[in-house]
Length: 175
Length: 215
Image (cartoon, rainbow over all chains, first blue to last red):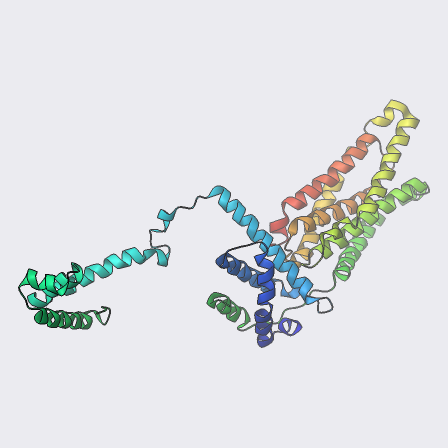
């Protein structure tokens, strides 16, 4: 740490990596979920960075680090209590573009529209094979009876349709 | 280690600049107190009636009270410097407690003596109502000067640091007041002194987070 105070970035990186298990152990005493623990650990690292000039090499490093980790864990806990007291969790709030992971449904709708266009662009025989075998999930015998095509012709049409759609969508369609 | 944590470490260590390590807190406190002592001495020599003060200090009770007042100021300032560092326990805030008890005890005894000697008059307001303004008027600028030095530590728990700083500067202001206070305190004076010290402590505590550049 003394080397880090002198500007040695390599030594500083080693210190920060080596203290992570110790910091996590302290943070876990106050926080349960892994995501939250990692958030607080990062907060501890940022705090340590900002007060690194207060470390005295003549004194124990673990006591200095432990005090910072403990203090920031308690602060995070207090912030959480305050936030929980004034805010309500609403899953619907995530149905927006704010959280990328929450946009999966919207992205799925957008993918569906693209897929529908690709299916519409297929020749009639191939399009019928895709609609019956994939979208309506019929068996080959049922599709054959419904379309009047032989089972072999349906298999060939479906295979060609998938290949054509893969080509059109840049490999996004699973067979 | 998560990718975010690894990425944070990379950002923190990339282009790391050397930092100037803080000097030991007792040394920093001594330098600050030394500067205040020089300025205070100049002020007293210029404006105070030293002959009157020398006459009054012959009373051992007053000498003891002044010792308590000065020690409270010095020890509270030292405690503030110590508490501003992350690894110092909160028990540092007890450092000025014995001298504070000595100060308040002696001052309280003085009030009681005034009451016994002077009867009902000893309960009333003394010759000045300016004590409150004096302690607050000197305490606040001193607190600002102390905050300027303490904020370099970026304390993680700014509340106790600010409270100790407030107690320290208010005590020093109260000590300075004694050079311009040619009479024993009554209960009302005593109450005003305590109220003034409490006011400075509360003001310091209220401005802790911003004033000390805390997290």
